[in-house]
Image 1 (cartoon, one colour):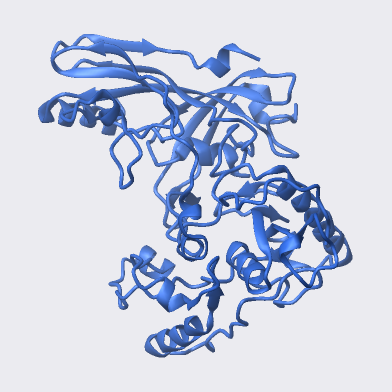
Image 2 (cartoon, helix red, strand yellow; image 1 turned 90 degrees about the vertical axis):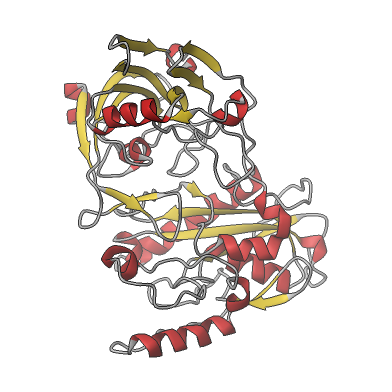
Amino acid sequence: MQRFLAFEPAMISPFILPPPPAAQTAAAEVIAKVHDYMRLHPESELHRQGKMFGVLVYDVTSNDQSPITNNQSYLAAFSAMLDGSYHHEGFVPPVYEAVQPPVGTSREESQRLQRLLFANYRFTNLQGETSNLLEIFANEKPILSPEEYFDKSPITNPTSLPPSGAGECCAPKLLHYALSHGMKPIALAEFWVGAPSRTEVRQEGTFYAPCSGRCKPILKWILGAESSRMLSTSSAPIDILYEDEWLMVVNKPAGILSVPGKTDEPSVVDVLQRPALQPVHRLDQDTSGLLVLAKTTEIYKTLQAYFQRRDVFKRYEAILCPNQNSKITNHQSPITNHQFQIISLPLLPNPYDRPRQMVNVEHGKPAITRCEIRELRPDGTVLVDFFPLTGRTHQLRVHAAHPDGLNAPILGDRLYGSTSANRLCLHAAEILFVHPVTQKEMHFCIPSSFSLTR
């Protein structure tokens, strides 16, 4: 286990990206170790499908059994099993060694065995209390299994049975091990190693926050209020670009919701203090740019029909951060040679990790984006224009990051892969539509700050 220079010993939220430097240093060592393992094991599953790994930096002075004092060390973990085993040298053991029901087990018997399994997954929290997965998930909203989600089957167990695989992810394993061994956790980081995932967007060496479905309820119980600390919302003003008696067009800052959500975080409607306003379309909380709002229900329905019929022209600006061996930085790539590319990757929500989306050819809804390169920058990033031909959630972010898309996450994207900026570098820069009452052409163009600077 590696030692680090000490820094403030207070648990940093695992949901905040990028992780602190000490966790990044630990992650780099684990990645190198896993790469050595892959070289020695060419048959490893990691060559075909990568896996999430994690590190937990802890204060060794809190562990009486540690021979090291006044310093820090780290633990490492991998999700579920690696090459058919829960146990590999240098990684923490599972919380409970699960045994999967045999093939052919009836659904009712499978659920009974799952309940027994979850009852044996017991976690320790910051207060030294213990609780099993059934107790932790008792008040959580049920999550559909992939079969129920895809086939639209009725939910046979509406009593919040934990999702399959709960308790086997890196973050819960690491925190449980540390707290049950008297260690004081400082910072946690999860990252992908091995071949990229073709369904979820997971790339080699990229940091990701713990998943919302399997992990977040466990971490909320282990860490208490600490786990709810998220990225701060924007305090930037909202510029009103146009307003008449029927509609309004604003420039939404990054960090503000388009519509009021389930949390106390502010939305455009809240900041403007205009409760009657209805956003006609949505921008992600992390995305800035042009947003159209209706003042009456009739105008709202008319404008929404425009968007649904694709009668609205939209252009987004983005800074992409190419992955290693990215198509964009390869001068033989079609996207570089032709300066544009059409990406078609069908999308659907990830039932275990909302609000993330995943690529699924069989069940996903069509999602099509036109991308045009504007500038290959000296720092290796790429300025592009996106023209969405459909309007799926996170469409541009997934199409940019996915290895079958551009293989180049948007800079600052904390969900899909590039967190080296203080914001998501995605901006709704241009919109064109016909006014639903006056029938005049409405054209607005507001360049992003990142498109004007290098």
